Length: 86
Image (cartoon, rainbow, N blue to C red; front, side):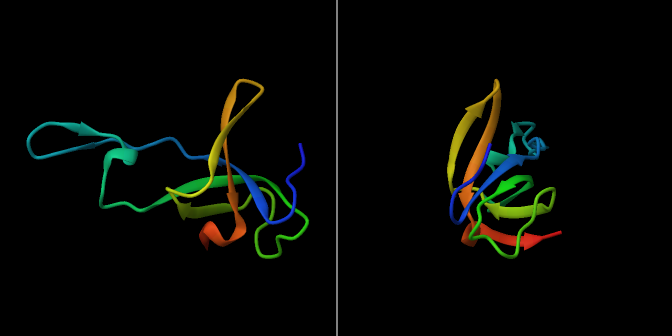
């Protein structure tokens, strides 16, 4: 697999559930207080400079699109959607 241009293929970290005061269990994608998600970088395009394979990053959860490769759900984002490299 090879990413093209400024695209990055990532494997989002599993969502952490949070229990509300009322007892409801919310997944990370249902929480409005969290805008960014953590992921591991799998492949970077040739035009990406700051991010490298195997980096842990935070990215805007609304960014990119989902793809399925070898029965695994992955996400493709642009390099400018990355906000933090750990």
